[in-house]
Every structure is written in structure tokens, then in C-alpha cells.
Length: 314
Image 1: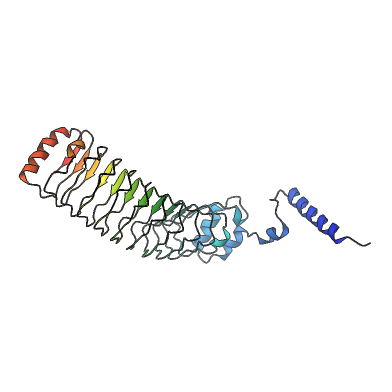
Image 2 (image 1 turned 120 degrees about the vertical axis):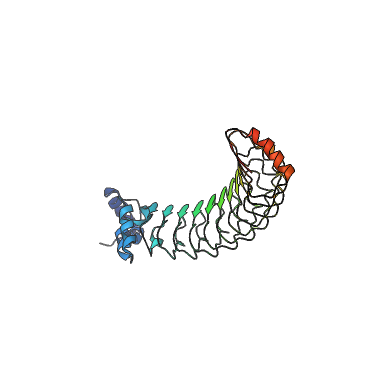
């Protein structure tokens, strides 16, 4: 009997869907089924025994790599992690506190959260990870990081690396930027108007412009080389730390919300303008280590009377 080729194709399609339905598998084609990769296979392909252990600990009831949405391998002492390209739907990846030097995440486009803190990574390519909202890669050995493609970033932690430059001009969604303990000599945050927290302490900054950052509540710039700073636009500041710089004057008259004010170990000879608006109950004011004149010391002595139940050191 002759069989119409078109009828044969229809029959095959119906048969495929029926088999999938009876076995309660996702409605995928034969070609897609053949392309799915078992998690156990990826485990077997790992050269690092600790990477294998982590994958086994995380797989749960999942059989296939495309079912794994989250992977947490904190402190597994992993030196090498390969085959991440098969975890195509991975959204959260935490490989912090390991001993990784390199990591290829170029095929993990679904990633939104990536934590690589406390490793030995000296370079990483995140250009394909455009969905990232949270990137934590502090305490590594990075000398360069390109995040121009990561425009969805909200929280970036790159503290304790060896960075001399970081361009955040494309990252306009940033709310938290932590870049402390690096070697930055310049930082442009004029395009990051939504920033609420900036930690850039212990760098080599000589100046910084915060006029476009009215939402800043926390600003930590201690341990730099600042000689001046204009805080007039930062009316939301609650925590300001500019200690251990080279500041000769300070005006905090527009920063009445301050509760934590650290300006110790600078070159201040005059009392910061507006200090009387900050000193009060439960405030923390540190001004020691400045060459205040006799008149300034008298003013500070008077202000001390208003510092009930607070920390006021000068």
C-alpha cells in the first residue's frame, strides 16, 4: 500500500506529542529531546572533584541541565569549574569563597545574580550576561572589568581588587556601588543619579563630583587623597565618611540628615560649616586628628554640650 508522505509526517508528529504526554515530559520535539543534557553527564565531565560534589548537592530532583535555575557552591574549595555552558537557564550563581582563577559564563545569558567574591580571578568576560542585576566579584585579582554591556546592574561589588579604572557611565540603574580597596585615581558617577550607596574608600582619588547624586544616603570616601568636596547636592546623606584625606575645609550645612560624620585625620583648621545641625542626640561625629585653632576648639567645646547620648570626638 502506498503511503502519502504528508500523512506520514502528520502521524509522526502526533506520535511524538502522544509519547511526551504519556510520560509527563515537557512538550518538546525529538530534536530538542536529543539536545537536552543530563546533569549527571555534566558532573562526570568535571575535572574538579569539588565541582562534582557541588553539582550533585544542588541538582535535587532535576534531571536535565536546563531545569537548574540556581547553583550555590559557597566554600567548596573549587579550583576549576567547566561546562557551565550547559546550564543555559541558570539565573543565580554563587561560587564565592573558592579558588577559581578563571570562569567562562559567556553562554549563561539568563544570569541575574552572580557572586564570585573571595576567589583568585584576574579577568572575566560579562559582556554576554546582559540580564545581570547583581554582580559581586570582590576580593579577587582583577585589574580590568568591562561592564558597559551590563546596563541592568543595580548592585555592583568589586572591592578589594587591583582596579585602576572603572567606567560606570552605562550603568545608569546602579543603586549600590562598592569599589573600596583598589587603586582608582578617578571615578565618574555623574550618570548614576540613582545611587544610594557609594563605597570608594582606600583608593587614590584626588577629587570626585557628587552633584548628580542627590539620592546618596551613604558615602564612604575615607582613605583617599581628596583636598576638597562639594556636598551641597547630597541632602539625603545619613552616613558620611571622609576621614583620612587632605581636606582643608568642609561644608555640611545642607546635610542635616547626617547621623554618622567621620572627618578625622584631615587638614581642617576651622569647624565644618553646618556642624551644629548635625551634632545632637544619637549622632556620631569624629573630628580628631585635625589642626584646629584655639577658636575652633572653643566652638567645638560648646557644641559638645548638645551631643547628649552621642559620640562626639575632636
